[in-house]
Length: 483
Image 1 (cartoon, rainbow, N blue to C red):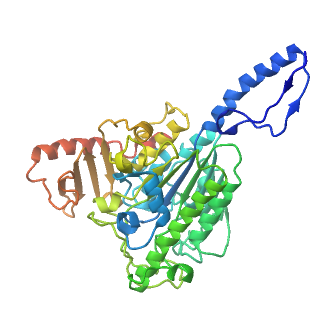
Image 2 (cartoon, helix red, strand yellow):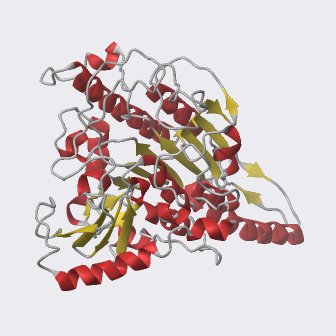
């Protein structure tokens, strides 16, 4: 039997198999049947592998709620504005009040206090072998990369390559000076690295992080990937080049405020370049993009003398968390509720009728992204993992409700803790005399946390304290379990 076959492509999703020329061949019937059976067996597995979504998680550093234009900020952020318009804005997305805790929670799906990580820290944050988003996704065929700030262990042997990342680049420690790329003076000052090797490079830190991300995206082929881009912008110290200072609106006065605005605009442009790289490489349609910040905005002194001198301007940062109370380091809304967007073309977007106005108003927390990404990638929760977070997949994709739960948060140095359940939020502060100062807020009536109801709602306080004690009882458990 002679068969002439013309294969110009494949009907499989994402063009898993392509044939660019006509093929004419003669085969016996037995051979043909074997070929067809092989194709039928192979095709679904290839299609399944290629249908796994790519994931790009972009995290700003110390970016306040109102530092972005789509929340009324005074610096233009056209790329983030566009992403918010096209995607879904999570209007109640919570993180830790400072950086390393947020990063440990993102990586593990566990509350940061489960690991005893409550401060920015250079010591090893996660025990060796701790499962992370990267290691889980890598186990099912994902390629993984981090370009930016790690801050979960500031030595190469504690770096991302030991926690599931195929490629790592940027600062092993915290935020760095923008031009010399040094961290605070001390044993971790030299921190700029590529795959465990400390390196020296020239250029602005925002450009370097962005260039590495774009280059990595452009080098991807068929395998799904997880790209984590934790920028150091707008963490102090800020010092921007004339290219961006010249674009700052004239209405913004003062040396540090203008550099800060330029840093926001520079960050926005870098996000735009990453999105453009996804578009030009044909990967945007099957890529989930999340943008968020690690904590609220800061008003610390910009030219912190703990950093090796980079000739940065003097003055306080104008981090803007309006209209919320508090800032970085605080358990009030301004310290923990941050601008957050998720977008996946044709799947998670503003036009999804499940989310009128492109808003997702259900409270969510940084711990939710690990279970969410694992579900979207088709990876079941391992039996030995005790996530604190929940998957948001069904809620984001189809508007399905999330079961009521409490959101727990711990402030730096354990000085305070909070619990939110439905619209109620309790903050327990440790006073110098050993007494607990309690604050109770009804966020549905008082989102700005102006009226403490603790003395007037004793029954509600006791209910919330029970939830808080239960959450606190699990602190440190993750680290103990990993030993």
